[in-house]
Length: 209
Image (tube, rainbow, N blue to C red; front, top):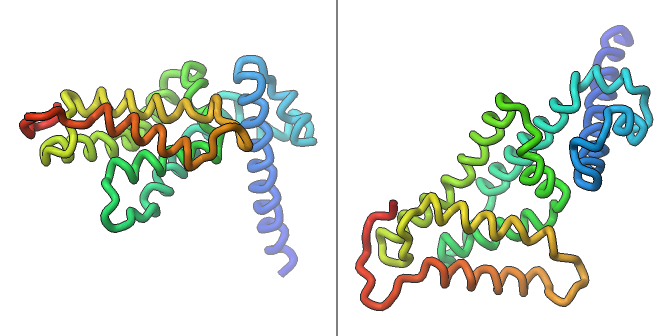
């Protein structure tokens, strides 16, 4: 039995080391920027020899891709599990979900959005595919709401990118214990979003672009 236990123990240890590499790299990338961080610095933060990193991630680029795809996978999974209370408008539900989720993960947000430029073309395409999946959620909400007359949006895709960019910028300035609570931030930004898509008097429902 011992002969079979050792490989399992090694796999568990390997997963644990890989996760430590991810966490260390995330912190370093968020604090110093991807380009300024070396594999040697990551290995030092993890407490392993540089060669040990290559058993898990052949290159620094692989770490960045892994961090971004993991962030998007967890974001999409969290949205699927998020329950919209009865009577809550879909746009309100999305805005509040997005703000809360991202405020709890400032390092992941910074790396996922600010380091897109550092991805190699193939990796950028993979990450962008997942980003578009998330954007489609809001685009569909805006399009359906515009058709129903709840919102007035000329181009749902453009409005989606504008709204997400605005909401995703919150973690860059929000600080726990500051003048605004998370609830206050939610209320302020939700109001801004709602006003930006609100129909004007006499507006006739139409298909969103």
